[in-house]
Length: 618
Image 1 (tube, rainbow, N blue to C red):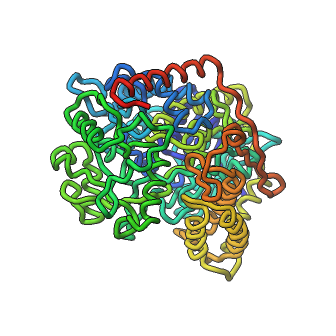
Image 2 (image 1 turned 60 degrees about the horizontal axis):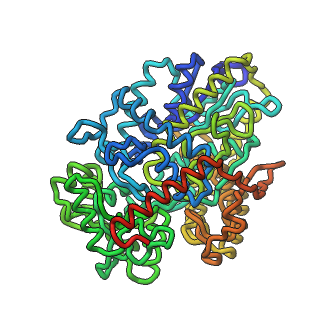
Image 3 (image 1 turned 90 degrees about the vertical axis):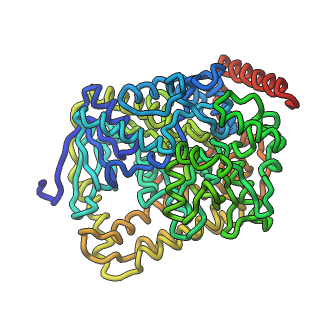
């Protein structure tokens, strides 16, 4: 224990976050010989990687030998509305198969085909069946595998500690300060490299699939440390979250339900998605129910699909907006969503392919999905934006600070394809850990700056010392409700401007709240601190959304409904903090490398030819 009331620890590499990205980064760092620690806000196994139920996208070509990295690259770029960093999309498509096979070698038990290779299922936006899966518990199996592997790599673990401050020396990071969520104790860490793997920000919205951890901690740490963020206007509202009962509102309903043939209906029992196929997807998807049903029958029989995909498997932004439109038009389900039906698959197939979903609805909603339809609606699920990183190394614009997984931006652009998140974690988690460790080899251990540590601890203790003030829980609930109403799935200039003013008021209220005086087991204190990062990151998202005057992917402006290819199709929003103020600028996208453009054109021609062969391609 240091004299100022905190413990000191020294490491080469510190990974903040213990989800799939953090675990994979720590494993790779330790394998490179770096002394490595993981600091996690929650417990092992609690990460949001577990929520990725449908599968892990990788062009293994087990379900269709026409698949390959070029097709996966094309699908990722197309799904991103061509705002993805093409270098990251290339690396991801090329390296994902090896990372999946590596998991298999480490003990991951994927579902198998009759010929004993990894089975792959269809998912929205993917040309071929590409998602390696374990029923509908893929993320859970990946976390289990990585945790078991990590045990043998000599990684130190600090569970239930929240990092609130990054230490710096000049421009580079040199460590961090954290507090214990159980006892309220403090720890200061020195590190040659730090990897942020803290996940997303979706707890900033009322209806979300994320649990209490997802309060934008890592995004705020990076912003406060001087790193740049990009694409923060792009928030993915997953089309299918539970909407009833209220206690489970927002809990994810995996896209695997639609991947296994699930059909969406409005309250007039119409399969409404046929009315919402965008022009850019015409020819890719079935245009009649007969075509869609033929496809479903072929998937059930285990054959390769020979007709176009059903419109339920359009990209997530399209499906979420369609459900939203049906509800607005009065054609929604009784509790403000749509109906999702998988009962035609039969109980045996559902319990085999979707066991978690069967159990989830039976236990939480009293619904037997083998006999009844589910009620589902959009839920804030994933932020495409995050820390701007180097595509090869995952280093941010701050030396020594790396990011991987959902907190990092670049791979997904304006919209993430389902299944790409899990392969993102393992591809770029490995790269972040590898390069963080390589950087650490050439550096002397940095010293812990006592003045910075004391200032950080004083800031953390401030809410406990106010003596009076508002309950932080009330501010927390009201701010999330405001974000849901004004920075939700559909946005306007007027509401976004109001949101920015509201957030200033919420930040002032957060700075004056009082959670009580005890540091032990005080969730109100934790919430009072979380409010600060939530207010700043909500401001970043709202400002980016206000600035982008068009609709694209996960960002829909009701007052600018048409994509603007002349400007916004060529530019990104870059956000940073300067002297406590959040700034924004536009930056032009670098043109795609020639050979990759040739690959895109080849795949487009192949898909067009395939659609024409299937009859009626446009």
